[in-house]
Length: 122
Image 1 (spheres, helix red, strand yellow):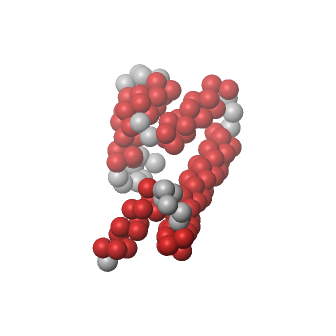
Image 2: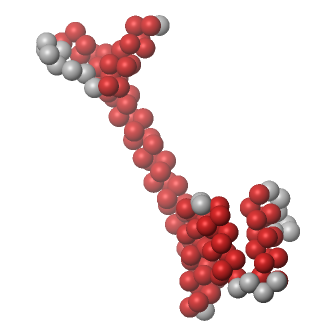
Image 3: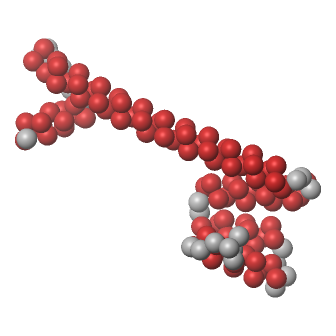
């Protein structure tokens, strides 16, 4: 993969291959790379690879499972972001509808009052 691809990650993986060729264990070289990059998905992948190597588990199955986990996590994050945007839009709609109906002393939420200011500025 390091020779067939281009970019930063293949370059980093080439460094892992060089380290392994000099005698550093693969698990140690991958762990060091994961610590340097500080990317959660990459760190989890490295953990799964190391676990598969230690348990002599077929690596292809482990990588397939890891890929599915990564896809599921990306989907969860996307749904979470979409949910926050939906809530924000609902909050804005409610604020615009009920602005004249708010009892005295009732405070709008910070996003509602901010949105109201933005709308008045338009």
